[in-house]
Amino acid sequence: MKKQPLLILLLCFIAGILFQEHLIMSQALIFQLLIISTASLFSILVKNKFFQHIKHYCLGFFFFSIGIFVHFHNSEQPKLPILKQKETIVFQLDKKLNSNEKNRKYYVDVLDISDLKQKENLPVKTVLSIPKDLETLDFKHYYKAEVYIHQPEEIKNDFQFDYKKYLARQDVYFQAYLPDDILKTDKRSISVEDKIRQKRLDVLTKINQSSLSPKIQEFLKGIILSDRTEMDGETVKDFNQTGLTHLLAISGSHMVIIFWIVLTVFNQIIPVKFRKASIVLSILLIWAFAIFIDYGSSVMRSCLMISCYYIMVLLQRKSDLLHSLALSAFILLIVDSNQLFDIGSQLSYVAVLGIWWLTNPIKNLFRKPKFKAEKLFYEISAMTFAAQIATLPLAIYYFHQFSFVSIIANFLIIPLSELIIISSLLIVVLIAFGLSHIPFLYKGFDIFVEYILKIIHWFSGFESLMTKNIPLNILELSILLLSIYFLKFLIKDTIKPKNLLRFGFCLFAFFAIRILFNIHQYNKDEMLVHSFYREKIVSVKDKDHVVFWMKENKNESKILDFVINPYLTSRRINDFKINYIPANSQSFVYRGNNVELK
Image 1 (tube, helix red, strand yellow):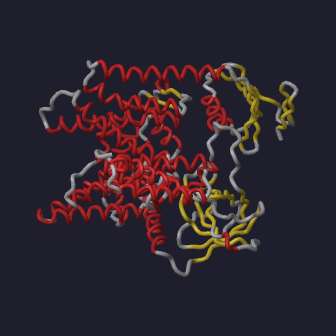
Image 2 (tube, rainbow, N blue to C red):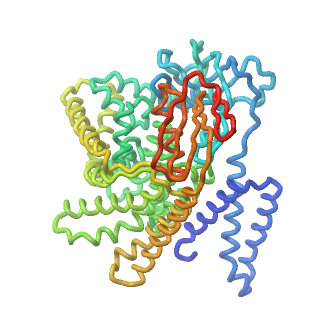
Image 3 (tube, rainbow, N blue to C red):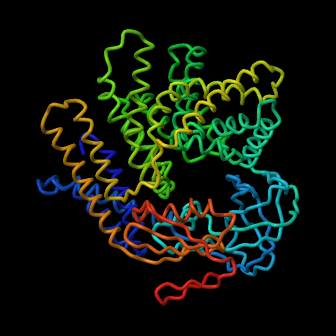
């Protein structure tokens, strides 16, 4: 507690969030717990040996109960309106989402529903899909249209992605599809927030109208303005398979680089005695930039970390990366405790922890640098390896895949990331201010990024080095993360027996538990019915082999991605077969059990 009080209290706070997430205590019990934990804090004031001994536990218990209280309020579902399948709604744009082949998707605020009598349950946030041939939405108008609307379906199997819960964490409780035209009317007054969002949309439109090639336009919108909504599937796939997705969308590394650019410029302009003013102005500017690009989760996290770190510098306190990380996590989770379950949040904080924990030991493995450039190369390489090692178990747990080529791709591309981000930021600024009369600059940027994308595409072509459907449960993940903790001591002193034993024991425990889970799944025989929109897929598992029965349809590749592969991963199976049944089949009979396929 004395060395890292913030981190330990943060862990207690997180434990409270997890406790409430899984056990769901009632409001009365939560208030009772708060009263008890607050009363226990008075033990700090009692000058008794026993109470002085337990004061740290009482403080931890208080933050544990605060975590329960905060998550109770952040996860409480509002009273929802009862809707028919088809409704006429009035709505406004809230956020643009990733598009698919046919539709654009948005988060919208439903402000009014024509046939709804109880208006007090409005507004309500909804995912809205609109055909691409219809007009795009903006923040300057209200819209009215007839839509098909419903609540997301409940999941029926443990291996399925719980889309309903995911949306609920974003305060979204309905899905809607708009098939026909939209009526729109100008807003009489536009809020400052909507004006900023509209300005971002205007800059995105200017990028679309620039002389850059379409693929480079989408890359530019993603890497600087956090907009990947229209990016082509091939580019996204290339970045996913090479483990470079963090470069594709603006993230912590982007904000750090942008902050350092701004700080360097201010340090050159502002006299040395006013260096604190440079830091303050730089922090204000990155927050302004974060607001302009619609303050996405990854951007907010990095801005919080940077701000916490440099506030300590301004207060002339010893700057500590771990304190900054813990403080920023506290602020983020108090505002929205659901961020704890966001994959991006988890990967970001684990990456920073990995950099803090492993960078120096890895850097010491290199020879002593003779030149500044060599020293910089070693530091970037060590940080890259540290972040990759730390986030690897978590990435496998969520995405169930790993590519050996991602290590090489990150090693080669990450050192170029600073140049890529700086040049991209410069081009966006020029386009935003209408300075499009520098054709050689745009052409040079186009060629540079196209070359980078070709390298990434070449790396993604090594599919033989990609391992998919890797099963990993929460217990296996925990042991792997513990082994990474002990890895630091092993790197620092490989010969020491204690370090070898601790790391070796973690690996032994991991493989032992993995074998037990594999045997458990091997002995499970089952028949399940999977739903994919209106399609029904039947799976019959026998030991280490499974047969899927389905009708032939054009969605087979999506069924493979969203139904078959998740099932294979959860049941730890590689051997499977797809059998097709006639299109007019009404039911499926297995061991005397009749399954409706309608």
